[in-house]
Length: 305
Ligand SMILES: CC(C)(COP(=O)(O)OP(=O)(O)OC[C@H]1O[C@@H](n2cnc3c(N)ncnc32)[C@H](O)[C@@H]1OP(=O)(O)O)[C@@H](O)C(=O)NCCC(=O)NCCS
Picture 1 (spheres, rainbow, N blue to C red):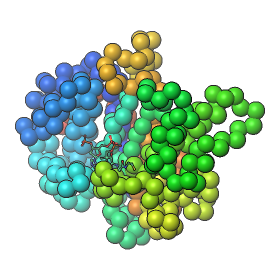
Picture 2: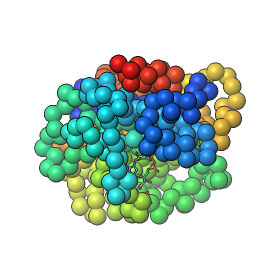
Picture 3: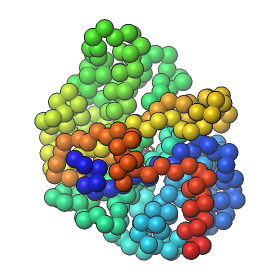
Picture 4: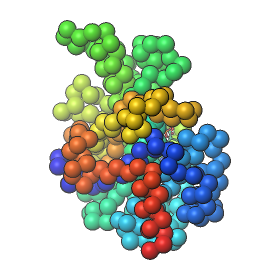
């Protein structure tokens, strides 16, 4: 499927160049008072920056793409904590994600028709994750073991049994990690589209990547062929890691310089997944990349217009 015909857009902010922004000043200048604490309550600066980027992306999308007044926008959350637009127009859906170097929003563009042939489903879900072994795990196989509780038996064997001809052990581990994160990000995106909160058992969803052309998404053992499909792409590491600085970053919890996987779950009758390259997504209008400096400047402009 061509990027242009997908019923959503993605804006992603590279938060790796966090030095450009004074969070407190920007919060006070650009956000309504009831949102200040949602950003400043975080102890770690990187979490404040991610929260700030999410708030700015949301208002900027609404201002630039939907013509809303910056200060008119009111965001509320469902009891499961899924944010939605409460004012001014309810005819808009979005979902946010943050991890590593990236904060991203998937949203319905002003020109999009309502999700076609998708029954009752009207919501998007997005998830981004840095493809890196968590620091508390000593090996990829240990990590797979930890994550077994989120996978069906068939998924666990797909992750473990990588058959790469003439590949080195590190290639095999890299592929295992990719598969594990593919399952995780797709399941997160799917459950976020449904608006489910913590506590949803990921083993109720099986993603058959080994049979992707026929039937990818199974929920509670049933093929879901009229519900959701997925767009996935790899994001590079954030710009800061290319500056030759210490790639671990001085901020605790910041991106480690690995690439990330981004997945959007969207309602459609056409279930075939849509893998896309970063270049392809950027060159079409599907993906727009922001750095923090430009995001803040564009937000100031939008607020004062
Ligand atoms: C709460 C949850 C949606 C957060 O997702 P995450 O991958 O940890 O974090 P992300 O950065 O991708 O997403 C966080 C954003 O999602 C949005 N969000 C929060 N609750 C949401 C929900 N119920 N549905 C959709 N989106 C939600 C918010 O915008 C939040 O960011 P914000 O707090 O800055 O506004 C997620 O942890 C969750 O509940 N997953 C499903 C169940 C599960 O994890 N099961 C695990 C094991 S069996």
